[in-house]
Length: 201
Ligand SMILES: O=C(O)CCC(=O)C(=O)O
Ligand SMILES: [Mn+2]
Image (tube, rainbow, N blue to C red; front, side, top):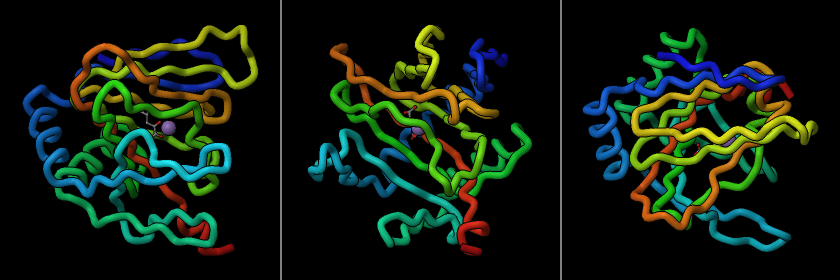
C-alpha cells in the first residue's frame, strides 16, 4: 500500500512493504557481506573528518560525480543491486543509473541536514530510497517556511520512500543519532546522474 506523505512543495510516497521480508533479509545479508563499504572523509568547519557512517557507490560507468577536479567513478553493479534497479525503474517509471548506499553501524552514526540537489542530478530528481535492517527515523524540514510542520518518518526493513517533484528544492532531510540500542541500518538511494549534460560542458 502506498502512503502519500502530506507535504507542500514536494511529492513523497512511502511503500511500507516494497520488498518481502525474505527479500529484504537476503539483500541485507548480501550487502553487509559483499558491498565495498568505505568511510569517506567530509569537510566539517574546514577540517577533514571521517564521515559518521559507511558508504558504497555502484552504477553504470558513465555515472560519474565530479568535484574538486576529481572524477569519482562508481563500482560496477552487484547483480542484486542491478535487479533492484530494474524493478524500481519498472515500478516508478523512470530511469536510474547509480545507487548510493549508506550504512549506519549503530545509533551513533548519522547524516546531517542536506538535500539531494547536486547539479549532476538535474532539476527535480526522483530519488528511490530502500531501507534495510533496523528502522531509521528520517526527518524532513522545509527550507524556507519554518511554520511548515517537520516530518518524521519511520523507515522499516523492506520499505521504499520515493522523493520526487520539487521535494529537493524545498526540503532538507537527515538521519539523527539515537541513544536507543539499534542494529545496523542500511539505506540505498537510487539516482539518475546526468552525465551526458555534464560531458557537454
Ligand atoms: O539514510 C537515509 O535515509 C538518508 C540517506 C540520504 O539522505 C542520502 O544518501 O542522501
Ligand atoms: Mn539525501
